Amino acid sequence: MPTAGYDRRYVNTDLERAPMSKPYSDAANIPVNASQPVLTYHPVTLDVPGRPVPLEVKVSIPATGTDLPLILLSHGHGLANFLSSYNGYGPLANFFAAHGFAVIQPTHLDSTALGLRDTDLKDAPLFWRDRATDMHNILDRLDDIEVAVPGLAERRIDRDRVGAVGHSLGGNTVSLLLGAQMLDPDDDRPKDLSDSRVKAGVLIGAPGIGNDEHFAEWAKTNYTVLYYTDFEQMTGTGLIIVGDQDLNPNFSNRLSYRADAYSASPGGNKTMVTMYGAGHIFGGISGYDAAETNDENPERVATLRALVWAYLRSQLYSADPSWKNAVNALENGEDPMAKVETR
Image 1 (cartoon, rainbow, N blue to C red):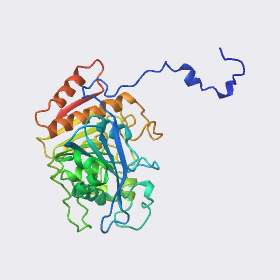
Image 2 (image 1 turned 60 degrees about the vertical axis):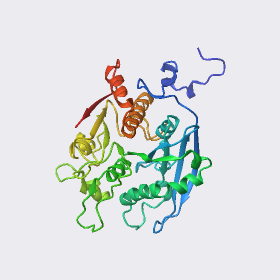
Image 3 (image 1 turned 90 degrees about the vertical axis):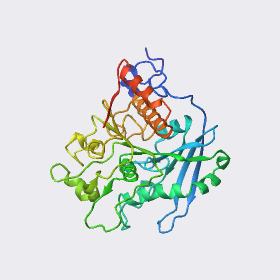
Image 4 (image 1 turned 180 degrees about the horizontal axis):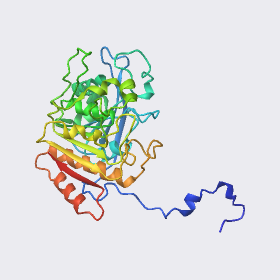
């Protein structure tokens, strides 16, 4: 019963009916190594010739360890004010760093925080090409980044163990690093933006192939370059993560649109994870309690990030069984949240 003075005008009846709270897991049922405290340093500012503003990055590292494997984490385009910047994707960045990776997050030029989307700069509003070159510049400038972050130079980033993870438009960025191309016939710039320093990439809800049969007029008008996405040269090793509810008619009326990077790229080194019940934000990967999440599910986030962690561990360390163990745990769980396939 309400206590004295309790005003029912301010009662959230959904909360009254809500189950008792419980702690959310770190990695769902996926086995991972021990978590440790995370050290974060930002901004590290890199002056890049020709870039309209300096490139700012956030660096997150585990509290201990040396020769740290690296994840480049590319934010999505999105409409939120700050999630589309290095301030977003905390549920992923913090987890990866807590479990042994150095994580570098750039603020790409399309970030809403920079206010450049509506300018007449080349490639606005997506700045798709600059996003890939941001990653090139980060890898070129790792020495500078290590010097800028207190204590990192002594602990060292392992240049031979580099992975890239991107969500939505960030997935497109990662696909370009793996060899995908944007074949706009009116763009005479080099098409190949791949980077062999990236040993494996993870595309989460990435844009697919545009064609007249299904590509929406809204996307063709506002994001014309996505009409020319091509995966035939995406020879790099990749994990493609899709949600079975990730359908946005502004881009395509075809649910398989987000899986094109898997089905249309060269096989032999591609894996796809389909997350059950997942929309475009996959339960909330872009930020803690993010308002843009329409399928909020912390356990889905925990499963996704643990699978990404396991995949990159095994790709960057050939003898590491993390991916095999993760798939076994996923498939043998009481209520699997995803399925895995390879080609």
